[in-house]
Amino acid sequence: MRFSTMRQLMMLLLLTTSCITDASLSDPLITSLISGTTRSSLISGATRTCPTKTFNATGLSENLESSQDDDQNETNTGKKPLRVLFLSSDTGGGHRASAEALARQFQLHFPGSTYDLVDVWTLDGVYPYKALVKSYKHLSAHPFQWRFFYHLSNAFPNGKIANIHSGIMCEKKIRKRIAGYDPDVVVSVHPAMNNAPRVATRKLGEIHGKHIPFFTVVTDLGSGHSHWFEKKVEKLYVASERIRRLARRRARTPAKNIVMSGLPIRQEFAVQSEKLGDRTSESGKIYQKQIKEKLGFSTDKPMVLVMGGGEGVGSLADIADEMYIKLTESGVNATICVVCGRNDKLKTDLTERDWDNVMTSRGIRNRFKRRSRKQSSNVIDPNLKGEVEVIGLGYIDEMADYMVAADVLVTKAGPGTIAEAAAVGLPVMMTRYDIAECRLQFNL
Image 1 (cartoon, rainbow, N blue to C red):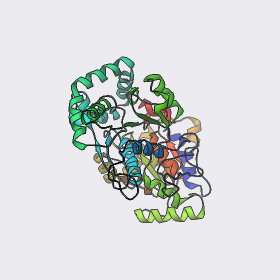
Image 2: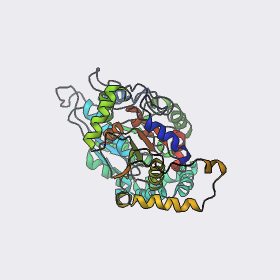
Image 3: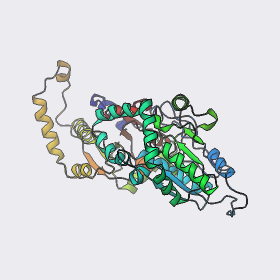
């Protein structure tokens, strides 16, 4: 994010009238899943940056219902509880969040259902697959290395070689792992969890004489890695026309197996969206104030929420520094909440940072920086000094509450984050850092 655009941010903070941007919903629409009685936590109706299709959880349920035997014991709802196995990895927070959102919908559709979230590569993979999480953390901090390895692994020959190698070396172990959970359905929400796990699930079904559906839910919006797509997947849920075309071209996935859908978001966003309504209305402002009080934030200052994914990456420290300086110098009172995720070092650093020293260091640097005549004319009133508080947050589960409380979200172009912000009408400013994480640039 270029911080010459901080003026836009400050305008958003100071506006007291409508300030919903193109990245948010002007009228959040959460559709009913079961006869109008259950609110879906899946987004629809967003403008530009978000999909306009609703995640077809009902269709997914129908696929599962058709696979249930008539002579099985069922609850009084007429639906047998399911054992759902999600395949994912902690390479960012979006995949886990999608799995949790879908798990909640399974529990609503099939009361009594249970689920597990498993990273088969960390548990049963060989090198380099078992180093997936460790490699992600390293590459997240080195975006140009990320770009290189992304394009390398996304090439057609490498994908084929990886599928053959992982199938030979890991499929039996993965099959044994999946068998230990005895699932009724397997759902992949990660691009690396599709080929060998799908084959393992099919073989497991053949051995035990039962059909175990294998679905893939693509959690990317504008583009996706080739490993997302399988020709023989039972159902592939995608969020955009662009992803659908990519699946057809890269894997020749049959059109009948592709379901156009929106992005899965967590149930609490549907709940908060309904309670909040239009955040620019009087009732919306009152509800936002109540949530701020609940979270312990000042209700007299606007709040900026800064995020960089589950690992807390994306130059968050630099972003926090620049925002603190600009808002302080411009006389804007604000609270800056930085979601550090699993980055405990960053959280500690922000908590212990001497912010007066940050201002002093900035002043020293500016003495040695050449300024154009135009820049020199922008004199800041020394009497203006905003009261800015910076709060470092760890990995939080109440993200819907924080997004309701926030007035502006500053984040990378993660598709799930965009969709969740849209659900509660939160204006979004995108950072430039993760354009190097090349798959995300297509979400803008």
